[in-house]
Length: 588
Image (cartoon, rainbow, N blue to C red; front, side, top):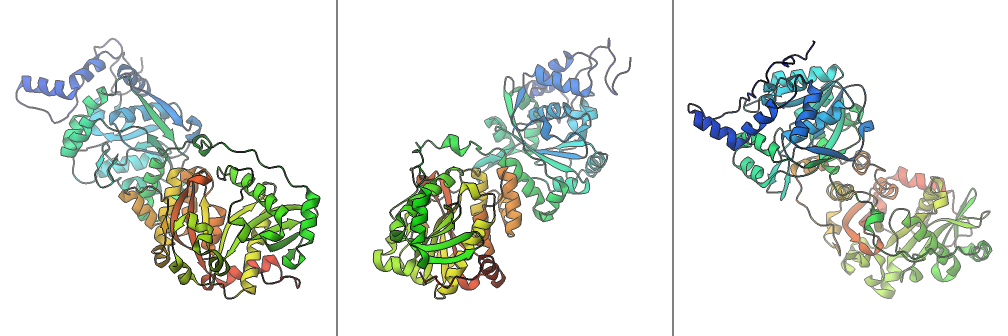
């Protein structure tokens, strides 16, 4: 009967386990004590009890059963694993051998060409040897032969499982957390040269305290304790989270020096709390207010001809004081709330209206034929508002602490906010372009305005990891330190100590397009919010970030756009899409 290489034929006695760990020499009693202390003797009992012959897949399955270790997929599915082609599977390493067995068992259900880059000690088991690309963890320097073998396997179109840390997670005292030590840059090298897709996979959990202590003292001691750590997993179920695979072309867009850290951040992002904002939001939401009668809205618009900024195709754009448009403002409040709730934001009220709306002006896009509001923006001219109410008359004072020094620094400015495009129009780019065309028209009519500023929201529908990365990256690459020194968020994001991988990734994300791709990957959805991208196109700079719990936990970035710093071509673009201002428009 044919058998796999190295596996005893049926009927032969099971050979003992022979693992070449450094162990006590010279005295039999010392060797026995070593085996008992490390758990090797117990593993040998399980090994002797195995049925023979077993192919690698059957042996992995037997080992998990004998050790009473199970696993479950808490995110993703087998369908996320490409059925063909070179695939590099990367994972964090919280336990040791347990996740190696679990990942091998999982992937062998999908592919037969699975190999595991792992400790050469595993090759002592004949059943596992065909699965393992061996690495000598006690050898200093690079295991060149192992890397070449791994590369050949990928180039042949196979699956390679790698734990890039090379050892089990440990305490990072600087970051005050348990995580993998720095990942080897070899993982990115394998992906590049093997032209392989990369599949990030997160293993939930953390090492035992004893393992953490052992690893802190000596990495060789931790390796010696792998058998005991494996036995300690008895009766446990490992939670696994599969991410979306990374195409070689996508990885190539990341600077090579940051690729390994990028892959690590992707992997660990799978372990962040992905509870939906809808589930986490315990607020009781009031039913939306009924829509105002279309004819009443049309009648009110008819009285605003002096406030019309422009006409563009089937749309009209107005900027009017709240006192001149009470019904329209009620409808704007209703549409705001409806739009914001789609993003897990909103005030929770029937209409999103507040104490600032009456003394602000409102830019709104009107569709005459359909008699409906298409989108809107709230305008606060700081000179007029501060003269009448002081800085407390500005909405952003409810999010950030600042005083008159900030207004003195900016000079004449417009606070923008509460922007939306009505749900029925959100598939069209035209409404937002026209709203920005209206802003450009106001700037053309009021050349004394030096700054546009206001909160740009990052919805709770983004994962916490994605929101953090947006805030941290913008604070590094797109900040205004002078203005940031004048403001303080009332409810800042909780601070965290960044591991080196996060710092390295952030340093490589100066290009907003690249940041958007990373956020899309981490958040498993859209990239940067559209409005935030628009502000960056205008050379916007951020002065701080605040969590607005009264608005569903939205993260607000306080952005400042220097009118003089807007790229001329960008400003011309917004002016061109809006058309020329109408002769009837007055300076607001």
